[in-house]
Amino acid sequence: MTKIILCGCSGHMGHVVTEIAAADAEVEIVAGIDLSETKDASYPVFASLKDCDVKADALIDFSSPKALDAILTYCMEKNVPAVLCTTGYTDAQMEQIREAGKKVAVMKSANMSLGVNMLLKLLKEAARTLAPAGFDIEIVEKHHNRKVDAPSGTALAMADSMNEALGNVYTYQYDRSQRREKRDPQEIGISAVRGGSIVGEHEVIFAGMDEIVEFKHTAYSRGIFAKGAVQAAKFMAGKPAGFYDMSDVIG
Image (tube, rainbow, N blue to C red; front, side, top):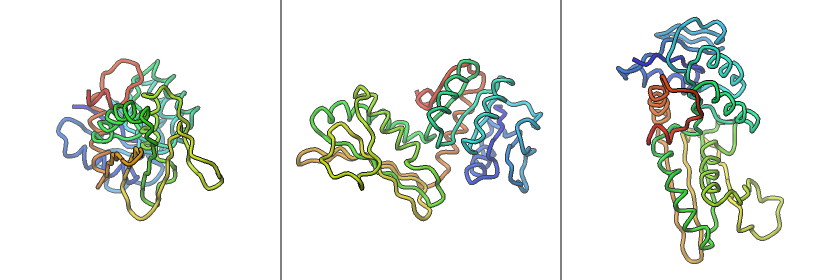
């Protein structure tokens, strides 16, 4: 039985993770962390990790980048592996996460979906073949109107995955409205759409001369992210210090 602390338990994803965990006999959420009041929770909820006195095997975070300092401090002091599912971290925070990985097991993934993480692998192979043949790369991501960061962490992960496969020589272009020039062959365009209740949609376009190759992933519910987070927590329990991602979970 993997015992989990859930940060952001009162949010949309927190509720979904709670439901997924309740249906999984191999895990138990033993405590939640959230500033907002949580009604009818089946576990104790604390306003701060400092107040939490419940022992756990792993921590799942679906809160906010603002909570990172407290989460990493707690996990390093208690030696509790962290599964960080929040997006919108700064470059400095990402470096902070990697440094924490030297002292405790830390997983950071922009997207917890099994399908997305398999797609990341496929995109690397596609980029190695198509980019040298002159195909331009564009990413279009769509999310609900409550999402505050843009582009999405998943879109950036896709861009990073392809860029890494291409020697990290590509730049990212987020806005062409102020540009009056030909497209740079070594750029990856990333466009963000926000509207309605779109859970998450990512499309990667390889546009060549007279042919187009497209990869697309659509999330129809938040359940896929919650299920991935719970699977990651089970995987991370007992792991030694290090920086992990979902590719380690799916093998």
